[in-house]
Image 1 (tube, rainbow, N blue to C red):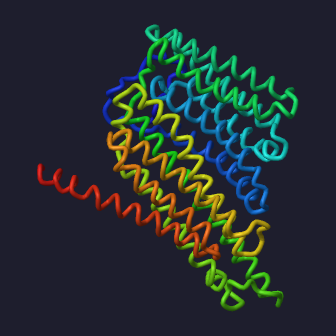
Image 2: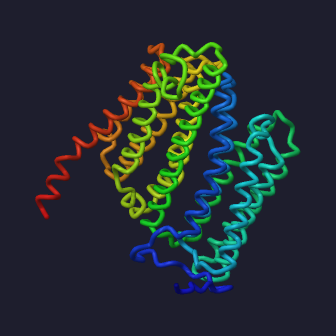
Length: 419
């Protein structure tokens, strides 16, 4: 077994944008897993809010998800350009991970009060960690020193404003949040366009985004399985005590009985949804959109907020749907079904827009997604059974996938003929 040496300090030089076989590092994979803890905490709060008919939690979910996604995205693009894998880089990455865990711990307070000292502290740790990384890049890459300094200064100034927001009157929380979001989004735009683009690796970026999509989909499966496990455990406890058995169970006793009736189509529909979302995301190669540069890079980078937030919200809605079938939810079938349909629509439409960006055929790419979104909304509005509604939405997405496979069959056959 050979020892892999790690230098204490290396010059922070620009990575080769055409480097072959550039893949995610073990540190980046760990980084993603830590951030998914924050995603899961946020999604759990949305699940409980939907189940309890507290629909105002949607706003808290979107606010918290922005903080999680923004910190992840900033680090991901930086590492694509300047990851030198020395001890200092690793330690600063650990600092950012620690901030993500603080943010995850503060998510419940953020939902309850609209502001959280713990969440802001975690976000500040992440952002000041990024300041340290950008200052190192400024020292080691003279050609992009002004870009790196703009990043470091912009992040620091905006972060100070986030901390100052803790003392803002409650009535100002939403307006100040939106203003600071705009300020955050403008920092990269002004830094990159005014002082030159950082040397990110297109294939590496696409892989990093794809890996996070897979991990968030895994969180959807996990939250759904945990919800079903809760149903089965409650069913077994009720049967053992001789109490009333939920109407969706065909007969008391045994976990399998708890998956009959209304629960079986829900589980099947949830699996179809997860599989279809995975297929849809990876049905196109996003590298082309990034390699073209300009507006495409920004649309791809920023547009994924809706993709990731939508996928995580799908998991929350499915878990709330389990509560509805179980009879533990204060919300009815229609609101939860609408939450699921809207989340699916956001993901389908955003992914179709991103695919259209690469294909340069927006009409052909967008029309099926619009039709699928409309179909899901109709199902949510007219189908009275929660399990049936989830199953039908899963079938709608499966049909969308089948359409895409069929529509691209000719191009694939032509490519094989050329070979």
